[in-house]
Amino acid sequence: MSSPIGCRVCTEFMTEPVFHWLKSSPTGPLMVLTGFVHGNEPVGHYVLEQLKECIAGLPTKGSWLFVEGNKQAYLQGKRFIDRDLNRCFTPEILLEETIYGHEPELARAINNKLSAILDEFEDREIHLLDLHSTSAHGMPFMSALTRNTAELLLPVTPVPKISGLLEQLQGCLAEWFVPELTTSHIIECGQHDQASTLEYGLNAVILHSYILGMMAPCEQVESAKAYLAKASAPWGKIYTEICYTLTVNKGDEFSMYPGFENGQPIHREQPLATLNGREICAHLDGRIIMPGYHLPVSEGFFLSQDKPRQ
Ligand SMILES: [Zn+2]
Image (cartoon, rainbow, N blue to C red; front, side, top):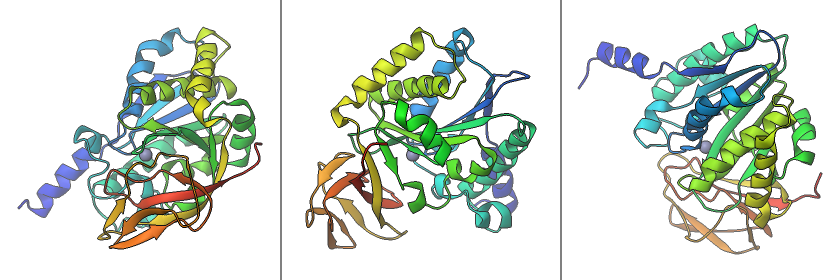
């Protein structure tokens, strides 16, 4: 067993967050891209590698920063080491500093480093786009974290929309930095291991950068719009709102019944999963969102109901 001092040194080494300045400009807005906040979601890594190759040739404006999320978990092919990093951006963890472990310490390090950068850009527009993927196959989607993000992006982007998701969760990175941001949104790009998920992420970054005024019209923007429209087409123009979350606590035994896809319609009394040996059935007609197939999960699934398109 390691000595406490040895652990401390090792942990500090592992929790140093890595930021990449893809482009730096003395004027214009700042785009912050965050990826592999969950270590089992390779889309962020793909977008980072692709942008390193091509961003110099794209008609971008302003500065572009890529924040690596949970690299240690990514390298180990795990969602997280000690706890979900995307539930660690809370005042309790970030400010009180009494909770230890890889992700709490990593969240504090990201917070300190990114906050200092956001302070430097406080007189400019700052956009944050957090890239994720899901364990189930099915519908990719976006979630806007502020009203103006929704107003800017929702009417003009061919990506299914989910609202109310972040209200159900505590400690998400994209939510924590909202006070410093002009816009903040999350894109769930599809199932973790599908090649189309990687392309969906890259195309979403290009199109949304254009809509947010950080890229001039060009062939890549047109092609991104066409790609997203086609890849989103099976789900039409879905706009759905989360109305229920099945929370799974540490030590709970959760098992999703097989065959559910993200965004799939479900009906009242339909059996969905088991939790600690008890069968869980839907209590409403709606959709199942992010059924959790890769354990461990913090939420077993969400249920939503559709809203009129904005
Ligand atoms: Zn994720």
